Length: 295
Image (cartoon, rainbow, N blue to C red; front, top):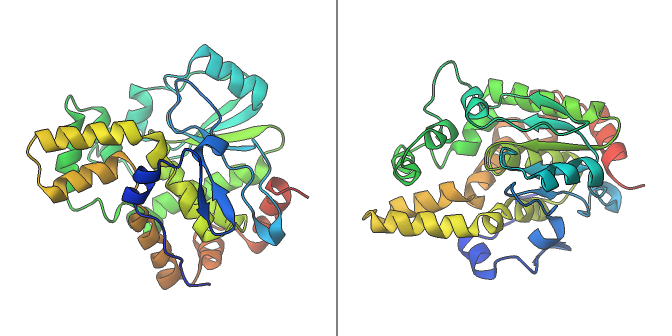
C-alpha cells in the first residue's frame, strides 16, 4: 500500500474554515459542497462527488453521514424523506446514548442499531460520560487526562466487537437496494467518521481526500470547539489539557492517521484489513464500487 500522505492539522483547518473549500491532491473538499443542509442535525453531509476507483465519482446523495438525529426539525425529516429518499438509518451510538436521545421516526426509513463500542454496563466511554454529565467541559477535561484520547481510533480498529459492528455496516451497504443510507453516532465524527474512512477506502478514494473529508467535522463544530476551548482556559487548564478538549470537541487528524498506520503495520494494508478483519471480500469491494460509483 502506498505510503501515507501528510494531512492538514486542526489549526490549519480552523484557520481556513474550509467553508469555500480546500484542495486535497486533485480533489477539492468543501463542507459547503458536501453539506445536506439540515437545520437541527449537526455535521450532516454526503459523500457524493469524491473520485473513487478508476476515476469514477461517488454517486451524489446516496451516502449520508450525520450527528445524532434527535433535534431534527420537521423540515429536516421531510428533506431526508422527500429530497434524499433515505430508506435506511444506522445508529452507531451506545444503548445509553440512544435511550437519552432517541432518533425520531423518518418516514419510509428502517432504523438499525449497530454497536461499535463495547458496553457491558460500562458508562466510562467518552460519548456516554459527556452526554450524561452536568458539566461536559469538565468531563472533556477529565477524559483528556485519562490517556485514552490519542488511541481512540486505534482502540476501535483492533477491537473485535468494533470490527464486528463495521462488518455489519458493510453488510447493510451491500444489501441496500433503493434510496439513500444514512449513518450517525452522537457527533457524527468519530465512530461515524471511522466508518466513512473505511467506506471511502473501499470505494478507492485517495487518502488525502479521505482525510480532508474527515477533518470537515472541525468546520461543522468550529463554534463549539472555540467555546469549549474558551471554557477550558477559563477553568485554568494547562496547554495540554486545552489541546485535549479541542481534540475531543472536534477531530484530530493525527489520531486517525495513527489508526491508518496501525492498519498497515498490523494487518498489511487497508485491503487486507477489510478482507480479513471486516470480512469484506474483494468481490464485496467490487460490488460496493459498482453500487456507489458512477458508471
